[in-house]
Length: 169
Image: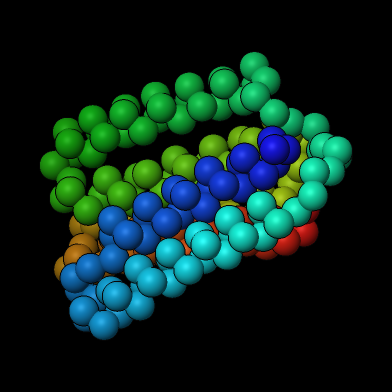
């Protein structure tokens, strides 16, 4: 399996987890179910498209290089360091999902430099923005919507991006 396909599957799996974990109140039961079914359906579509493709030679640079591992290490440090800062600021628990979206988005943007491909910048910027919006919302009366904005919408962004990338591969 090509490394690009592995990355797409990782993104789709993460996106599905974002949707499944964060879909819930304040969404109605119907919208929660719709979001979760849509998340799983998109994952199935990504799997179907990815595994239906024939093996092609890799065209983009990338892979699991030193640069890749540096970005992953920086992501882990940023995640856990950020959680500590949020705790020190007495942020509501919903801020954590927003922080995850910011860090995951920024790690995609960093991969642009590592892999020299701009395609992953788009979902990266969208996730970072959705995470930033969620962080801003965390200190407002809209705090209950943070998991929907930073979790469900980020997850759907990852799933739709994965479907597009797997279709173009």
